[in-house]
Image (tube, rainbow, N blue to C red; front, side, top):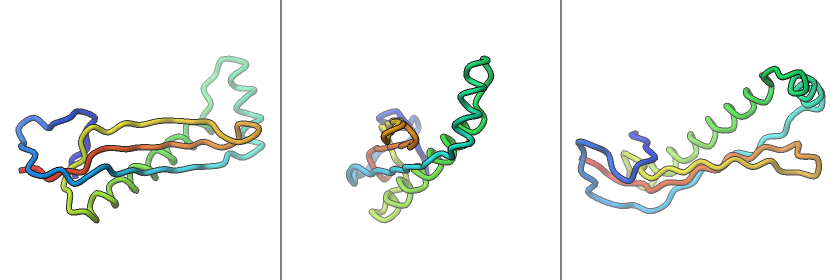
Amino acid sequence: MVLTTTPNIEGHRITEYLGVVTGEAVLGTNFFRDFFAKVRDVVGGRSGSYEKELARARETAFREIQEEALEVGANAIVGIDLDYEVMGESGSMLMVSISGTAVTIT
């Protein structure tokens, strides 16, 4: 499956537009990781725990968008847009939302 943020794929012709596909992932973060991430953020270090959660959410959302595209017969997704959102009362949830247009290419 070809995935791109551009509206077309160089060297390929889009033969059919199959509709918008989406993938979402909402993940909670652990209290202790939150605490230590804040400590690292204060001293200027990187927050490995948040980076891992973000990567996991992004991978889940990409997997979902590809599964949805395969279900409609696509072999590519163009115009992909990624959005990140912190949710929950204390900002303890992370949402990654991905959308794009499922297409067939030759």
